[in-house]
Structures are given as C-alpha cells and as structure tokens.
Length: 627
Image (tube, rainbow, N blue to C red):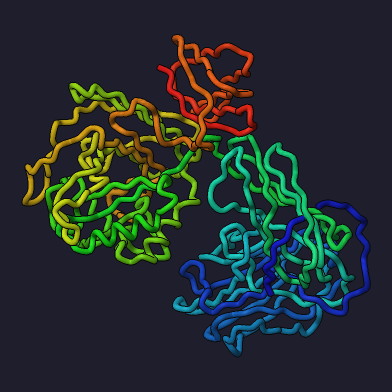
C-alpha cells in the first residue's frame, strides 16, 4: 500500500532498541502496487525474470529467520516453466529454489510455499524468479515507485541481469515470507531526483519517498536536506501510520544554496519513531544535481504555423495568447506562414520547417513548443492544433520546468542609416545535453505587419512573422556544446527597406521592414536529418534590432533598478545606493566585486551578469556588456 502525505519536519537522535519476536513477516521492496496495464517484458528472449537484493546489513538483521514461502505476481498463466529462487549471485547456483506456475493472472500476489523452510545465514542475498513465456506476453510486474539506490531492483534481459534501480520501474513485485525474526525498525530513504531545474540563490522545494523495510509501523521521523555546502534544513514528520512494506511521499521544506554547478543533494531520515534504525546505511541518500548560476533564464520557443487564408487562425492565436497570459515573458513566438496555403508572408525556410509535422499533410492554426513531443497532446508529432484550447494550455505548462542546458546572451549593433548591423551571440553550455548534433538558428522576426486575414479583416495585425534566417538556412548551423564552455558567434547583416515573400504564388510581394518592429531570435536545438521528433530546442533568446542593450537571458528580480553603470575605458563605476555588487562571467564564475565605498572595478571586455545587493536588502540582477 502506498501512503501519500506531506508534512514539515526537526532532528533528534535516540537509541535503537529491539522489540518482540515477530511471528511472521514479509520481506521485499514492493509497496504492493499491481497494475495489469503496467506489465513488462525486457528484451526479446522467452526467458524473463526479476529480482531484488538484500544487502549485508539487512541480511544480518534477518540471520536465523526461516523463509517459508515466496509471494509474487505474474501477469499471465501462459508460461511453460517458472522458478522462484534465493541466490548469492544472480545467475549463480541457487541457495534455495521452488518451481511454480501461476494458476491465475488476477492482480494479486500469490503465495508459493516451500516444502522445507530455508534458514537465512546472515549473508547478503537476492530473491527472484525466472519464467519461460512466449515473446508476445509481458509477465513481469514492478510497483513503479520512485528510484532506489543502485543495485536493489533487477530484471533479466536477453541472457543477463540488468540493474533497473534508477530507471523508474520501482521494485519488482516479489517477496519472501519469513518467521523467527525479531521485530525491527528500518526506514530507508530513496534518492531525491528533482523535477525541473534548479537555480543558485533561489529557494527550492524537493520531493522524495521513504520505504518501510522493517516490521514495525512507522508513526514519525525526521528528514534533513542539505545542498552542497549550505546549512542543512531539518523538519519533523508525525501523525503517519506507515506499515511494513509501505512507501510514503514527502515534500521537504524550502532549501537554498548560493553555489552553482553540480552539487550533492543529500537527504537523511532519522529519529524514526523516536529511536534509531536497525540499519542506518540507507538512512541517507545522495543525488548529484546541477544548479544553474544566478541570472540564467530559460525561454520556450513557440513556432506558430499560420496563413492569411486560414479562417480558424485568429481563434487559434487567441487560444495561445490566453494560455500564456501572465507568463508571456517565458516564451518567444515566431509565426511561420506555412502549413496552410502560401500567402504574402510565406518564406521558403518556413515551408521547409513543415517537415516537423512528421506527415505529408499539414494544417493551421498549429504550433510546436521547443520542437518537442508533448505527451498530453501527441506522441507522434511535435506540431499540434491550437484550436484545441485545453491542448494549448497543456503545451504552455509542459516545458516550464525543464532545464535549459545552455544559456544564450545577445548583443546587437546597427547603423540605422545604412541598415547594416552585427549581432553577437554567446552560447554557454551548463549541462551537456548529449552526443547528438546541435544547431544554432538566428532568425529575423517582425511585428505589426498589417494585411488581410480570413476571419480577421483587411487591417489585421500580424505579429512575430518570420522574415528570414541570418544563418542563410532553415536549419541553422552546426555547433559544438561542451559543458563549461562558452562559444561566441557573430553575424553581419543588412536589412533591406522591404522584405519579399519567397514561397508560393506571392513570391516577390513585399512589406516594409520597419526596424523598430523587428527582433533577432536565436535558439539552440538538437538536429536530425531523419526524425522530426528529435530536434528538441533547449533555450532561446531575442533582442530588438534597434536596441543596443543586451536583453533576454537574465532574470530581473525587481522592477526598480537602483544601480547605474558608467564606464571609463575598462573601469566600471556603479552609481546609486547599494551594499555590494558582484560580477559573474556567463558561466557563473564570480570574477569581481565592489562595495559602496569603492570607486570602480576594472574588467576585461565581455558579457557579465551583475548582481547588486541594494541598501533595502533586495537583490537586483542585470546583464552588462563591456566592449
């Protein structure tokens, strides 16, 4: 049985004491969750199996206990043979084994009794079963609980045993029933795997799970969370009733670290029922978690597929606007006049991108969020119809907590007289997203283009319209991403007085390219030549063409910007009322700081994230470019 409850926690350490001898108890890691819709098989061989490991400390507690029977769930009766076993090594000679064949596939644990009980000797062991079954059957059942430490949960796949402890399957639904073991406390904490992404200097809330391996019901315990070198945070859980074999979901109190980079997230359980566990080695779990440096921001790229002749498109655009209301700054929109009939804004690159639909047929209004699958909407195409309001709302929420992997910073210079400019883009890789190919795309986008729109009239305002690629390609340019590395890319460009459609019957139709209405959008993504669902976008940024200040990519924590930066060559002066100013590189490394009493700081040319502690105690974050 799985218990779900959430409390806040405080620490104590008391002595452990054994209690009375338990007449009979079950040993295993499953929380009892059985679901015929979640049955599994691994690999292609007819031989299928699952097992769990009992370590030396737990085995010592069980020394002298008699194993009387096995309990397991096999989801089909169509097996030719089956063997339950206890062994010192998976694949080795069993210490104890029992042939079995399920007589029913009902969702319950069935008991198979040994003719002669097997006495445990206090050494570590595995418990499992192997079945022979046709390749069309899925015989295995796991409880789908949260991940364990490595080495606990196993499956047999194509001739070898594979550790599944940290792959999201939980525990195998198999147990042993033993007698003659003293009643004992044993609450184990599983590794906490954070959802979303973490940022230094921000309060984080982590959730996890504990499991009662012992025989006694758990009514209270303490949980302590520690991140990197930050002070631990401890709180108390009480008023629960967690029986043997039960799991409990918890949410930790807020904790925070000023450090960035890969840090240890350590969670410890203690003071169990006001006492100490029989085994303390699994009372602490560590996870390596990456914390992004202060100032890193993530943007979600929304590619809209539309068309002037699309009568449903205005309604689809409204659905999108309403779904993003209040969090618009988290998204960057680009409108491709493709997917429907070509029109006055259609560009050849946009029609190339209809490949992302993953089908020969296209439609509008449609959108792709970060060019990624959204399970709530589709598992086959990254593009979905925005006429579906609920699907659009689900898409808006789907990517908000997914880590960005890279940071993008932009700076643009333009001579408005000649309409020539240069955009500089720094791509810093915080976490390596994988070995696949990656691309950088740099696009020109324009707002406020007034023209006809079906169901919108002749004076419809078209925004976020794709106007061309500075890469001279629909798919950008290949780039290399290495964790901890910043790479700089520069693009020289000239924006004509007017930009013409380059696809369909309206080729050559022009609209004025109003510089004040234009932005440059950059994004980093995976690249695939054959799979439209394998072009995931990690992060995006944009900058106004006519603004010489870097924008996007830095989170502004407060509205009132008290500090003002002035320059004297390489010297930076800070004007305003503040306590301390810290200058960070784009990779989050502190490169300098100054206090109110100091006059200036000298910094080399480059991009910086600047965090100022104001006299009010609030923090202000800005981006700074020194040329």
